Image: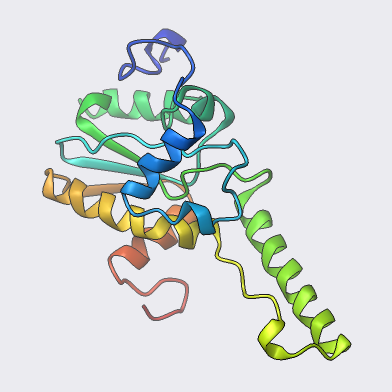
Length: 193
């Protein structure tokens, strides 16, 4: 069993990330994230990112946990314990692994439920506009999802991880699997590219 003291070997401290929201968002946007278009922007739930590491493995998860948001480091909560144990079994260490989130911020609820809710809310708003007879030019635009807003950043991160020596991507969850399929243009779930 991995002890709690071992669960984050990449951090010097267990102190909270002291950067301002502006600094954290600026870092994500400098990597290509479309933060200001994201419905999670300004909700104080991230973004959480980690530098690209030189090594053979990239681990891609869905989104940060509350502990990860507090400390500004991906996969250090319960998932980090499992990851560290698996890395140790494979003779790998966190400092040589690129760890990424598909979505750098945390939605208030399960991501799939959150995604469905924002799309349904938009569809209801469009139907209401149609019923009122509003000019279609004034109908609400379809909102970008957090996945779409983070995708340019994820593409860049995956490319840079590959350039840094990644030859294996371990995917944690369906959202991450869809994102990897999109990055590498692999048909997923019956959908072409």
